[in-house]
Image (cartoon, rainbow, N blue to C red; front, side, top):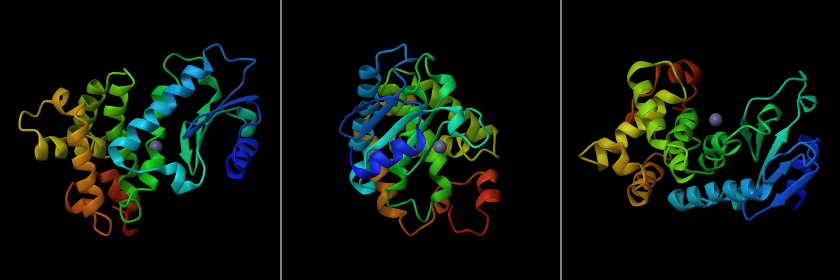
Length: 237
Ligand SMILES: [Zn+2]
């Protein structure tokens, strides 16, 4: 571990006694309570990183000068003594302690959380910060597919939210990204065709990164009411 990684570990995850280091991930867990194979979970987290690196051509590890520390966070590490929410900040992912031995976790929540470091080092982040949660839930679809967690149903759900839930800052914009992708690149509008098509995803992401660095994505995709309220006047959507 480098100095930054070590500092993240020691300051945030006091109840994790073991760690596994891979190319872009440091996975922290409590060996005395962990009932699954930590090596296989760490390998799956790295698999998410490999996939998203591939489709985005971004490298958060070199951008943040540290790997992403994915740690189980004990309630006593929180000011209020309660379980945290899953979350990301540069450059760690909090896994709530009460999901320790839950099926499909932390992989499922990390199909959202591990997109954050990529958005944060992408060219569109500064001008379009308010699109970040939607972007993460959008790429969660193909990432879930890669991890065998039914990304197709996820994208269907996002599309529903884009049509019916105008206030969401997460699912609504995620669905709008999916609809825009289908409109631009797939005449059949069949999600199953496009969600596993890395070449199309790469082209779409390159288009976003090349064209919306200094320009609002809202000129291209209609933002949700929730985003407008949250980011009003901040020039971030
Ligand atoms: Zn998020």
